[in-house]
Image 1: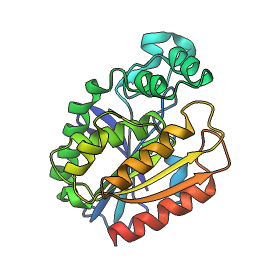
Image 2: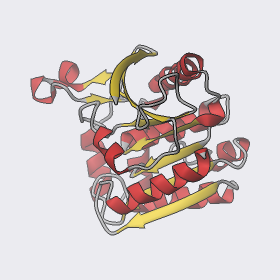
Image 3: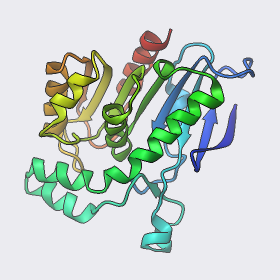
Length: 242
């Protein structure tokens, strides 16, 4: 069962895999889409996910409207903040991993109050604690979810980080240590042409060094979410939220 909500000024698509429970969820999984795609882009993944009973999946649409900003050929596509895709691609092609991380993160601070407000409204509206909320995403959505975990003032149940890149790499490990033993699943394609595999591998090592409980799922593919990743995500959600 799917319905459309308004939370923190965002359009949010709510999927209730177990429609028999109408009173509200016991747990919530928030999944953030990538850059320059429709806000509904990840909803089809719910067909492949297994979640504990009475767990709702929320798919918010990013606040950056690419059609309004960049022209009608991008109508209906969204992002979490405006980014320079051209500069990011050039850095990736020339093997400049740190520069690619920098370009991917430019402007990310604009979404922090949005995400804090969204998580607060989810807790208030559905009467769930932050420790019953998993946040995650794909590509730019993964970057936004990691940044949210690091900056949010409450502990969350876990992080699903699919094909993203690091945030604040120079201070990441110190920031991660402050969050305690956070649970996270990271996946990345070895042939990713958009965000460097090496950066995700380094991020995994840093989070592990910060005492996070990390599940690392590399795969032989590109910038995508293959079936093996969805299976790993299902296993993680069942462990974290059961």
